[in-house]
Image (tube, rainbow, N blue to C red; front, side, top):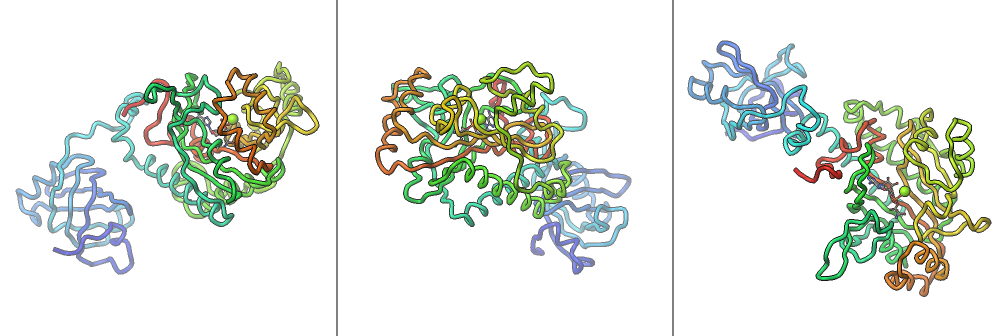
Length: 432
Ligand code: 4AD
Ligand code: MG
């Protein structure tokens, strides 16, 4: 038996005229008269296989003809030129071994979104889905490369926790051996604990939000990339986020151009995103919204419609800084010159995509932290371990969280965030 090689080998200059064996899944199958055409797919691409009844012999030809879409075969043959075949070459089969003929594949064109979500375990093989999973891997690789270069240490915080750090209402609660347990909404509190003495840490973990709202940008489970930086103020924070995003967006533009093109985002558009990003205060965002006709009171949180209006016409991300205290979490640092606001910033994606990064400086005063917990109806005793961090080497620090799927939604111009994750978790669906 000849050595099994990736299908891409057939398209190398030296491939022509070679005898080789390939294996993979059948993307398309068509037979006419005594010839069978298969499109075979493996991790490296697709290759047209042509098989003649007289070359294969009757029983082998009949078996190959019965292989369904997404069935699996191994093929030995010779690479030949064929101008009509994708890539200009085909493999003329001498032998086809059926590994799994497969049942009739349930997915074909023009099916409803609901049906495709029910069939997600099979739909994830489509060309578009695979491009998305490859792009996502490329994006995570780019982040890790950036953090390595910046000496940010990767750490592994827990998912099961006794604290609902981002607010109790949206935490998934469960019974942890008789005590309340929560699925992590953020790794932040643990990152703050792991900050000293490495000064800069990050974690990539699933985060969970029991948000009942069915919006095109909320998942109940998402990949959360969080960073915590010691000795950092609001300017240092926006500076870091900017450099990080430009670095990863440019890297995927350079390394994953094929996937980006296929998904509808020309890489040049990502290359044109450069630092610094514009920054406006919440205060001036409110003015801007009012001038656009919004009836918006100071103190309210920016919702989907407001965020969209602020960046719809923009090709650059936009930082909104210094939010009213009440719209944000308990741990955010009070602004030095205004007790009504906190040193927080959200980064809104371009083209109306809305919040992609949530960031803030962390409150260092135990008194204020205690006060803010009480104001939210939380017993500070539950956060005693967290408050302890302010008793031992309490230094200024800041951090942020970025939703990987939110970022990908913008990068790939998807209407719905569920397209950016293989098995989307939403209020109406947790299976398959
Ligand atoms: O703004 P959030 O809630 O901030 C935090 O959790 C901070 N503790 C992070 C930190 O400072 N370490 O969430 C951060 C980001 C959001 O900007 C958004 O991109 C994403 O997480 N996110 C979601 N993505 C998908 N579905 C959801 N339901 C999301 N909720 C937040
Ligand atoms: Mg937020």
